[in-house]
Image (cartoon, rainbow, N blue to C red; front, side):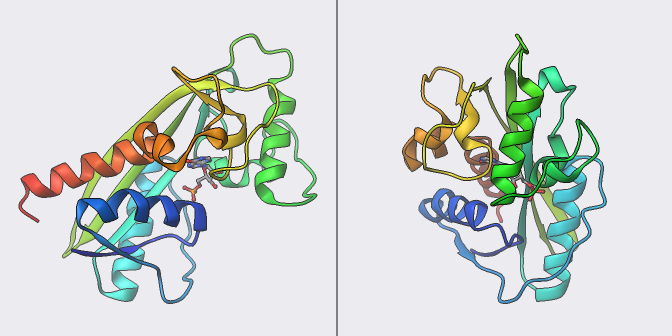
Length: 200
Ligand code: IMP
């Protein structure tokens, strides 16, 4: 089955391909960028909005991932604001020196200074939209926020997230290790099971 990835995030695209290809899906990169207003207040709403917009624009089954880091000591932030956390009012804006990922990490570590409770989760909702219907699933990976960034792999908040059962950050894991435990790996494998049950 051919699926259009409803994302322009290279880190997500790489992982969606890596996880779905062995399960028999061909994941296509969007031929052009389209602007989609992520106006939802939840991961599920935003994933649905993106999948439907890509389906309608490119006329093929579209798969969206909306995901982020949910930090208990910050009342669930950055959550749906994960990709632009540095720029929102919550906790004060962070100056954009270098990449957005770096600014997001700096802000998160600043807000976590002195916090005893460092527990957090990566959460992903994936939606496949086709033929007027949306199919969704959710995945979660629990862990803690590290004191400082470590590792070169992955993307986003990976260098400051230590998954449960590991003493290394997500950015220090191999791609296979990350996919085996990640929110995205769990959500996509569950979606694949759902599609099989629906005989799609
Ligand atoms: P979205 O494109 O609105 O879904 O934003 C997702 C954001 O959440 C990314 O830009 C990252 O900052 C963060 N994120 C999601 N998944 C991961 C992951 O697997 N590792 C690290 N950061 C992630």
